[in-house]
Image 1 (cartoon, one colour):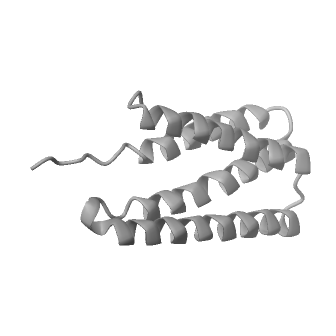
Image 2 (image 1 turned 45 degrees about the vertical axis):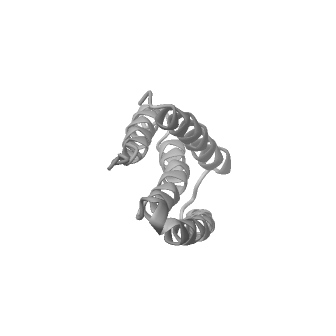
Length: 124
């Protein structure tokens, strides 16, 4: 009986978090508002992706195909809602710099796509 290993999906979140802390930490020496804005934008990308990851990979195997599909749909819906709530809360509560928020968000998205592609190709 073959056993399919779970992909190292949580490594993506760990690497993203480390890179985000390094980038925002570097900016903290230049402008603290920009640094916090970059951090906020990055967190808006990382947390919803982690939520999706948890739900999408809860079930494994051919027998669980219906549960897998349901988990992916729930994960995507939750990711969308968390992303909207993240942007709304950052811009309503925090005196953020929009360019820095979106830069942090987009940087983490590109990093996420790159890392997930590496996980899928088994190079991470």
